[in-house]
Length: 399
Image (cartoon, rainbow, N blue to C red; front, side, top):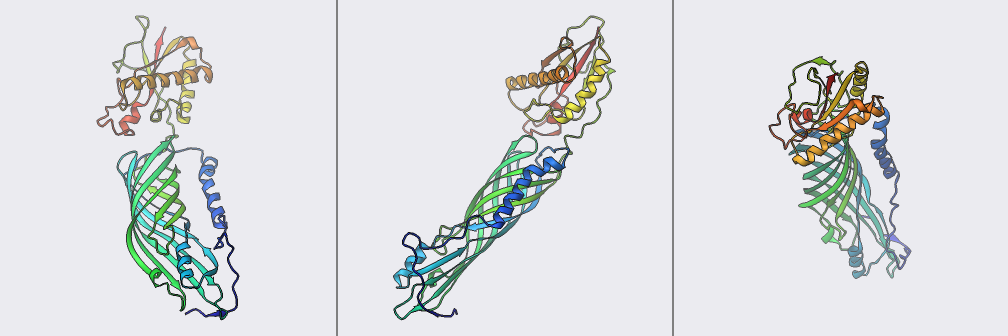
């Protein structure tokens, strides 16, 4: 039971019945600072970056700041109807929230994710205007929310290490809302706890730190029942770590390219023009090729090409044909154009960065023809076979 006080409480301004807390709190500023570190620090402390793959399973945890959208207009009207209008009201609608989660990737773009969340506790306090006998009555409210969720998560890759995510899910909420007051105030209809189903949605950004660990920044909105006549939602801005199963190794760890060796032509591509006694020699980029749907050279590809430049300069009497290829996903026409762009990107590097004479080089694209490995399931965009086929190889023709 709260203690009744005497005296006259100040009246609320005509255009505002409450005093809100500032939107920028030290916790908010600290969280946004950490969020900026997600984008900046990995570039500063890591020499290599890692390809974002799709693991079968992942687990993680996130922590951040929660905020309740609190609208007490209905509560204020009820107090006015009882002849006890509120003279002052202050809110504390921010707290620390966290969530634990586990997920299963359906494919490169969709995942199912479930977990536990706790959005923290928020509260408000108010004092009624003075009655004719000079009495005022305090009023306080407290709300705590936690529960379980099941989300469908969509992901769109941005390069090799970043991804944008969006989610929509169901929540099973355990919400405890209570009001502390004394008679003659009667607000029994608001004082209750409930278990119920609602929905949530959100968006975020992910970054691949290592082959097994990732980081995510998310903003989510959790819908609540209108326990105090408020807007009925809490927002959670969080930063989290994700542990992923089955990740591949870093794509920026190149292996040495093999030295040119004479070998029979293993490919069914049309032979390049050459003298009748020309002996073709094949050199293929080792291990690391192009990223999915990209023709830009990766740091690993440039490392390998720099090694090839020395080999080609040591054989000035050779003509070099640069052949580009793609994986099996996509249309024939698109893959043909992509393979040509990949071959041209290599040729440009050899001439502009390697200093080779352009007259020695020709580039050609073969699309998805003559794969290095057969792709049993072309829909698996980043299978080991698909990654092996996103390549460029050389053909050296002796004069």
